[in-house]
Length: 280
Image (tube, rainbow, N blue to C red; front, side):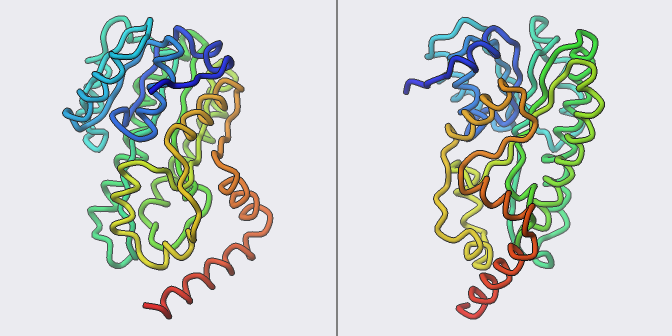
């Protein structure tokens, strides 16, 4: 499969050293494909070693001038994240770009979700990204250049039925990124946050198996965007220096409506929930 990479992405990313978490599938792998085509040196990070090896093998078959490395790490385990920086190849110790993409999700009504699910989502989705950023940011600040990106979720902009745990972790990530940008922007480091809607990935396929009917009613018949679409919007947004990136016209409209008319949006959600509960 040939990946089309726009000129702006090639100009901005070409030759950079980039680390992508959750790089073995979905949005992370789609992002890595485009960065590989742009000529970047890459470090893929994921916890599933078999999927990581498969992703690396795929990328090795692509034309690319940069280095390619793959490191297994569970971002839900702080000791593994702490040790990751020391495992980076010497040539990749001073990164130009960090893409915090790894995440986990388990939908379900609040009282039905075990507390362990809240712990895992907060640990991986927020603390894992925060901790890795804390480890790799100093070299960027020292050189007064760099870019840190966070792949969030549309649920990080509006909480909906069935996502009390997931939304909490993504809103924490959003607040962290907004505050971080204020600190590092004057020092030459950029920050970008991407808020994808439902995306056609293995994780979303798993999510659908556990999604409450009320959540499906709110989502309606909206078609999931592709991982390649999200990766393109993320990288183009980063190249343009944008902080806030929302892929997909429907997602941008939902975000706009929620910001301008939050009461109307909540009323629509309530109506969808009542109808779903009446059917079930």
